[in-house]
Amino acid sequence: MEMISAQQIEKANHDGRRELFSRKNAEGVRPGSVVLVETFNGPGEKTTSTFMGVCIAIRRKGIDTSFTLRNIVMRVGVEQRFSLYSPLVKNVKVLQKPTELRVRRAKLFYLRDQPGKAFTSLQSLWKQEQLEKQQQK
Amino acid sequence: MIGLKGTLNVIDNSGAIVAECIRVMSGARFARAGDEIVCVVKRARPINPNLTGQAAAQKVKKGDVKHALVVRTKKEMARPDGRYIRFDDNACILLNNKKEPLGTRVLGVVAAELRQKNWMKAVSLAPRIV
Image 1: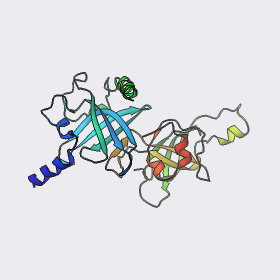
Image 2 (image 1 turned 45 degrees about the vertical axis):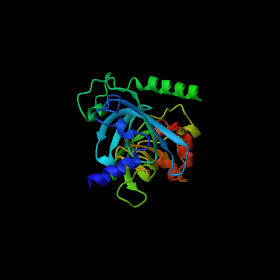
Image 3 (image 1 turned 60 degrees about the vertical axis):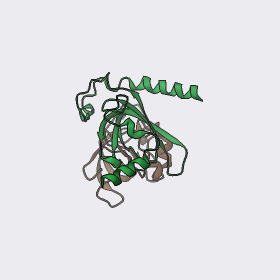
Image 4 (image 1 turned 135 degrees about the vertical axis):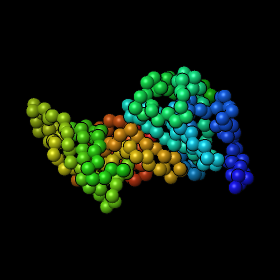
């Protein structure tokens, strides 16, 4: 069973996303890091939509590994759960490591009630990201 | 997952603030984003007595029974590609008899399920869709 799971992950890991979620990777995604995910809008489409947020939970289950991002959009909190190895996920990018946040938990569900300063930097990171995209084009 | 007695914030400019669901129109027990419900206005903004005529007629009062469209739910919804999305509150916009939005503006983010279920007028009014 483990071999089958490992084979599936190998096949789905075509752009190195497994390394992003490895526990040993210091630059990887950890609870409290700000992550940007680009997803294709449909199975055959090339158009993408992006979602950025603080990673509040990582569920490690081999091929079913998923992570939840939380963001405040127009004063309403929005959470999205993405499957890491889904073919519709185009790329996952870490924008900020969790050093600013000082988290001491694996699951940050307390941020739903006590956000503190967790979401204040997201606006500026988003603008930075847009600028970089413009420059790339 | 809005069922009987479920409360929702009303996020258009029809004058209502809080609505309570009394029936889910599709016959199911619970409504998700993109479903139509019948609701009672539980709290509404006070109607300015100076306002007369057409503008006053479009504002709703407390106790009005209206159809509404659920646009955000606190219960996570599955997207066809395996993503789940969850908002921090339940929200709806009121509809008139012709299934069109009663208000002229929508204030706040709405779920993309509205587009899938063909609520194009509501989608065009929405400032942000996630």
